Amino acid sequence: MPSLSLSGAGHVVLEAENGAVAIEKMKSAKVDLIILDINMPVMNGLEFLKILRSEAASKAIPVIMLTTRGEEDIRKTALGLGANDFLAKPFQKDQLLATVRKVTGAWIKRLDQAQFLCPLSHRG
Image (cartoon, rainbow, N blue to C red; front, top):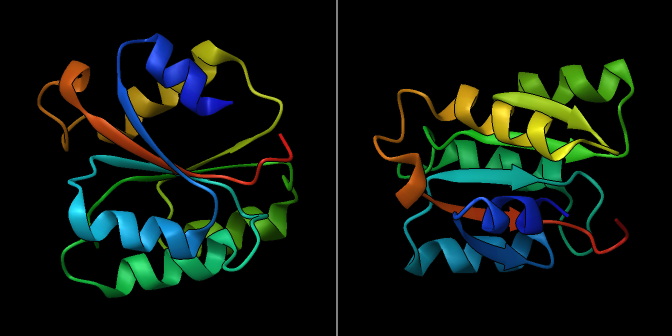
């Protein structure tokens, strides 16, 4: 789970069981990065990403897609909708943390104080 990798590295992590819950959480929390699964119930990751990028307040928040669906067409779709990077499961903790550092470079001044939102399916 990415939340374990990130919290184990000292980051604050908010979890949401689907995209609809994530949207609600974003109304009351400042989020510095979103790690997003495509396969979620209620609202999938691509639907969430479309909504996220349509809102002025969340348009610039970095998004890493992390999913079992690593096909090239899914990757292109996610990046075309505004994802900053894409990792296919299974992933290595070091790979996730390196990607977080890469996509948040200019966005987060102090990575150790960043807060992440992880709307993920619980299927692994």
